[in-house]
Image (cartoon, rainbow, N blue to C red; front, side):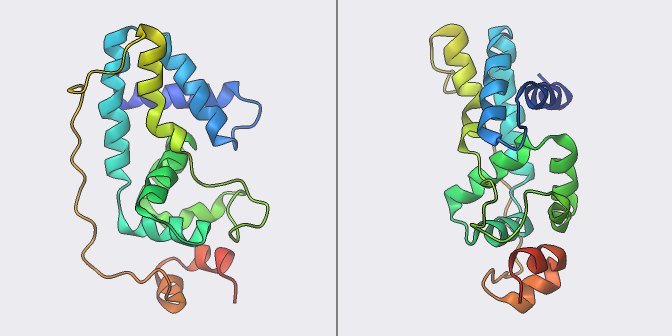
Length: 178
């Protein structure tokens, strides 16, 4: 499984759910689709998924998650990046390159005002669950290793509105109105 095949899996999963904004449904469908692959391909998917998690492990995206969700813990940041992955390749790649571009998504807005959550813990378990469904066994513990990059050294204060407005102007105005 390579990155292109993984993104096709996510696109196929998004196409098969009634509402692609329902991230848990997309993750569940991706699990079902992946479980039909041969066991070696299922296992080979975990490094791809973890690579995307590592590629999105960036301070500006953590700031975005904090803005959108009204705060963001370490686990919450993992779940946000899981949500980001099931949005599909275009959204993922655009937001990694330009985090403020998430302001273009209709599901983004002030926290806790009827918007669907921008977190999807289920994404983190797509491969594990697909492997268990296909084989009845846990994925091998040595199936992958991942190394996360160091976070940006510049200090970000997610509670400092002027700083956030300077760094993420569109999202700050959307999610943290004056």
